[in-house]
Length: 436
Image 1: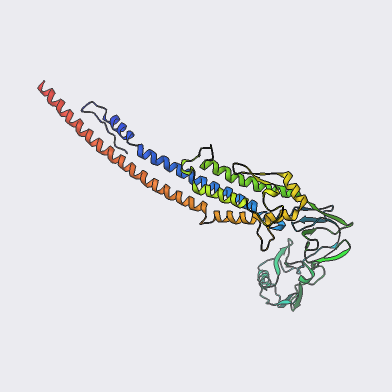
Image 2 (image 1 turned 90 degrees about the vertical axis):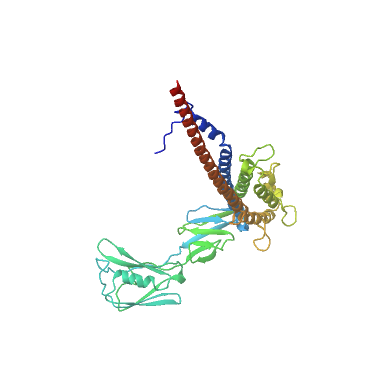
């Protein structure tokens, strides 16, 4: 419980108010340090926010740093039996597709194996599993339980999986291949055991390839995801067709524009936040600790420098030439008319500006993604500035503690002095009263 003091009892002077006033008048240095500490903590939060915005910008440019990502094509199908998607490597065209067989993986069940999962199966012999030229011979003991056989199958090293199945009265083993396709079919040979995996009623599917025709050309696929048949297009087969499906690949400039708009918007978010925190032109810094900050200026300078680089030769070799223009305040804007004109004139050149050739030549999106990654790294400019601010915050906290100790000591000394004075006044009053 804090001590209760009654100053001025002897002298009649309100010494506590005087002490409080003197301490309050001496709090200037502590208040300044505390204010600086609050500003520094706010600056650390601002740097974290800028880092998050920069990370979003990195994601936006990373979505444009390969030819397939830049490519502006879409694929559509008029049948739910064939779902088509296109990448940047696609080319406009139309295709008739007929699906006569879907790809499948092997699946079979055993005969009933008892009513309790932990009972011995009384199966004795060997179980040989084979996929292509790979096989495994499993020894089965009469004392093996359902779980024991499952463990042996799953530990065979083959691309197979075993599990238990309960139909409400009896347990069975389910055996399935993990991959579809004819070459991944599973062959089961029993010697002494009677699991019944090869019984016709127990075999639910075998490994088969998908069979289809694309414009009357036969195509086979191990899976129902057909890639490579049509350049840059993936066909997801879901049903056997009764009539041919038509897949159309066409330009998708709207999708490309959406990616570019995301790039512009995320870049502007970084620049506008830095202008707000550090100040820009007539804009006063929101945080004095970041006013005119050299690290923040460095971020915007490095980004704008990378944005204005030239890639290759020809008419379209800068971001500005394909419609991404820089405003006077350092932000970007997307000129859709210029973009559409560039795409109409030379779409490959537009792709090279952003993604290079995916081999030896880097595009501007590659360079920007690399730059953002460097800034966000553990030794990058954002983290280095946060570390510097954190060190300053610790120093300010230590200074505030020292200032508080000074004020506490000052208050202690004042109180002793006023207490002594109060006592002396009380004595003098007592002496005067005795003389009267």
